[in-house]
Image (cartoon, rainbow, N blue to C red; front, side):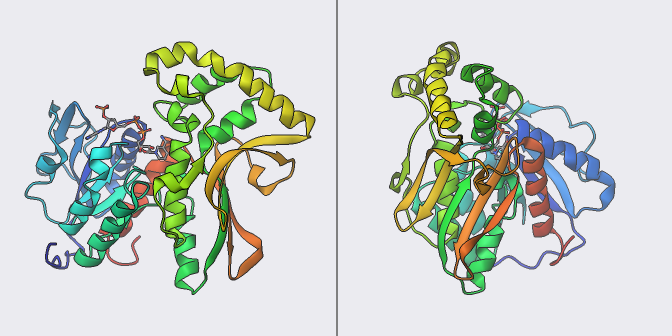
Length: 355
Ligand SMILES: NC(=O)c1ccc[n+]([C@@H]2O[C@H](COP(=O)([O-])OP(=O)(O)OC[C@H]3O[C@@H](n4cnc5c(N)ncnc54)[C@H](OP(=O)(O)O)[C@@H]3O)[C@@H](O)[C@H]2O)c1
């Protein structure tokens, strides 16, 4: 483990290394470019995806309106070489990069992640990320991993810091599944809604990440661990929303076969309507363990509050034993996710208490 870094002069902008130029990475870049005049204590050093990278020229400031000419792809390690106290922004879904988070922290780099595979991977990875922070003093921004910046994880931390035990959690944690359940009223086949969600940027690049429950599993793991539970991914019981045969297909073939989802979804909808309820994919954590499944909720259930891609989380704790604390709001989308990441980068980079 590295030695404690020397204090960083507040006036010196911290170098940013942005990994990922997809929906979230592009939104983050645009926000940085808009903030050029705001005096933020940040300086974009490098931007990379799997195919190309851009290295800032000296004097470029926070983020140039036009990036310099792209060079060939370089691994994250090469981009970080020689940097001190950089802030690494992980806007990818890369397993390889998630496995590097603890090492970056141990070397004194702060990490801000939208990539759930860091904290939502094996328990040992969560432990390593926390041990590295304790050892090096570097910090980890996780707000974009659950609820796209809604104050969910920070509320859990505040409750626990105030002496509460977390008794249980329930949540609609997938904005894309929330949107699909809401929009699926029988008018448009489910498979068509799925591609609309993808085109709008609500669904993951491969929508089966949402339908398989894999994305909700990672979010529930992050919530559960933040609430004090220790558990491995296999301990989360997930009811997937697509048959194994479709899960195994290459993405292009899945796109052609996705209409096989329409009949089962029409049946689910009919069952919900017959009971006077609505469909929701609900994650739960309590004495019975961690699990997620499609449920029929009675109309008016707080887990159906709001609309669209909203996330909803209910937290029962010592001070909220019967009426849970409820957190509800826009919890998906590149813009809110990028904003949450940038908020954390600013909080990490500025003097304590910034902005
Ligand atoms: N979109 C949302 O609403 C949302 C909300 C909350 C959290 N998130 C999370 O945010 C992350 C990014 O989401 P997204 O929607 O922006 O995904 P995306 O559009 O698929 O973009 C992913 C980006 O990561 C890059 N990448 C993958 N591996 C890399 C590596 N090893 N080094 C550098 N770049 C790498 C890809 O490069 P190429 O372009 O070369 O393939 C691509 O630019 C995901 O973990 C997602 O779960 C997204």
